[in-house]
Length: 466
Image (cartoon, rainbow, N blue to C red):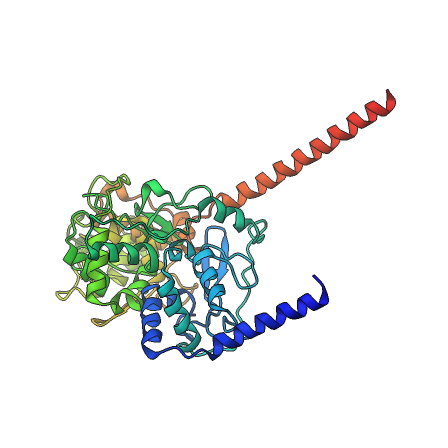
């Protein structure tokens, strides 16, 4: 590119940026964009906990390494303030930054790809003029080799990104259509609840069938009677999205608690009902559960076995789990794990988190922090550093989890948790084999190239010698 062409290109880019910043968007359009950003739960990932909204910097564990969220305020130096609307749309729907580099799909552009032009325009108006600029840099994402080669995402996108708009289904109601648009797009339900393949792509044949997401397990939310939420009514699903709990069935924690706090609880009743209508229509996926996770377990306690036994003695024997429960859990959840009458502290039987090992361990380690119009639901984390308040070791958490699952969950067969299982959840969940496969693939490719070069050299030498 000649110097003159470069200058013309820079001038045109600067003019577009100035035009974008000078555009006066209406308050109604900005408010529409704010609602869409809320429905998309942008703030949960692009804000450090208790930090400045949309300023980025949140470190998120992923199966291939730690990803740091970016500043998406209209800061011209550190955020997206210089993005044109087209560049904003490309980032949102295609995963391509303004500089042409691809984003990692931790940013759910694979779901946002179905966002309409009108909604993209509203979101752009909100982020440009409804969000306060924060002139603060964020740390760069530094994934291990070869995941740090962003250009590889072009190949991944070519294989797995479907950026075509949704095909209307005239036989369905407008409410169902709206629910599908929100659930598959802004709310990006499949990003967490759909299992991933070897290349970390969503498995289309198991849509919403449940998947491990970091330390937590996003459960099957299809209409399957036992594996999914086929036993829920639409009204119960709406209640769960609005409040994060259904007494005697489920309570939101982890990233779902964030989605409830920052997104679903702030959406209109009509949109929540639309999402529930759509989700309840999703075909069932059998993910292997033999009994519904919402009705297992029963009340009980081991206090009679602890009486007359010293604390140290109990902590060194088979009663360790019961002793830990009595000392750390019973004051809130009740001696028999019955919870409180208002369900603020839930029962631990008939509780989906008690049945799933990942979620039980993550709840003990990380706690619960959920805010809705009903109030602030909080459970302290017990996985802090050694010698800290409420700190439990991996061995202790394993004993506690086994006691809870046997006493209040799936029964004696559930006592399989080991200290090593706790450490996996403590470190952010199971690692992916993708990193190893990528390295092996590159090594195999390099060896193939070397072999070809050697073969060519040998042939040339033979011709010369002949």
